[in-house]
Length: 326
Image 1 (cartoon, rainbow, N blue to C red):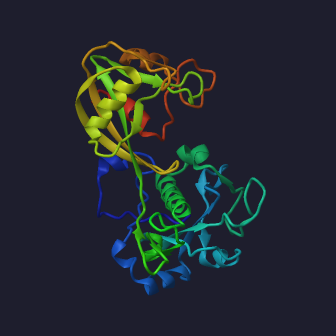
Image 2 (image 1 turned 90 degrees about the vertical axis):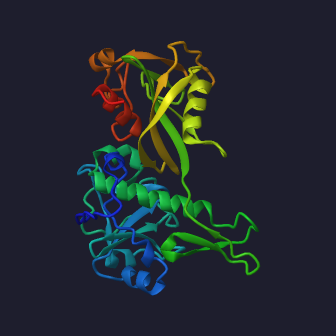
Image 3 (image 1 turned 60 degrees about the vertical axis):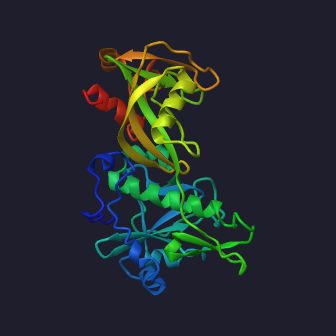
C-alpha cells in the first residue's frame, strides 16, 4: 500500500491519537461537486481502491496490511451496482471505496486480481484492525462507514423512491422529480465515559462481553440531549451512580456499524452503586494500583480480568487515567 501523505489541515492531535481516527487523507470536499474531476480520478493510473465485500475489508492478516487495488486491477472486476465512493487524496493519489458485495463468493470473499495480495482475504476489520498501521486502519474504517451508509439509504426516507449517489458518493439524492430530497452521511453519536472517584474507576461488564472483560460505560445520545447530560443519564441508568464535572477527552470513529464515540471523564458523587442487571452483568470500582497489577489484554481469553481492545477509545480513557490523566 502506498504511504498516505501527511496532510496538515484539519488536525486535532489528541483525537487523532485514537485508532481509526487519522487516515491521512485530505477529503477535498470542495472538489466533490466536480463530477468530471471525480470521474477522471477513477481511471488515473495512480488511483487506489479500497475493496469491501459484505462489510469486510481486504487484508493480508499474515503481514497485517491492507491490500488496495490499482485502477487497472479494479477494472477487471465485475461491474459494480454503483460508482466507487471518493474518499480523498494523499498528495496527488486519489482513494476510492468500492463495494464488491454483488459478487457471489465463498465465505472468504471473491478472488481479487491484486498483484501484491499475498494471503489477503476479506475479514471483519475488528479481527485485524489493531494490528494494522494506524493510517491503514483509519482508511479501512472510513471506507466501511461510507459504504454502510450507502447500503442503508438506497431509498428515500421521505417518499420511498430510489436514491442515487452524487458528489463523489457523499450525497444521495431522491430520484423522484417531486421530491429530490438530499441525504448526507450520518454517524450515531455515543458517549463513552470513565467515571472516577479518588484513586478508583468504575468499570462494567456487558452481557455481550467475553468472560472477564470490563470496560468503561457507554450509550447513545438521545434527541434533545446534550453530551454531558447523556453521560450523566447513562451512568445512572446502568450503574445507579450520579456524576458531576463531566469533561471531554477525545473522540473516535467507530464504524461498527456507524458510531462516533465521544470520550469523557466524570467524577462520581459517591461510591454507592445500584447496577442495572438488564444493562450490565456487573459493575464495580477498581483501584488504579489493582488494575496495574492484575489487568490482562483483551486477547488473553483465560484471564479473569481483561481490559478492552487496544484499538478502542475505552482503552485509551483507561490507559490515560492509569498514567495520571483525568
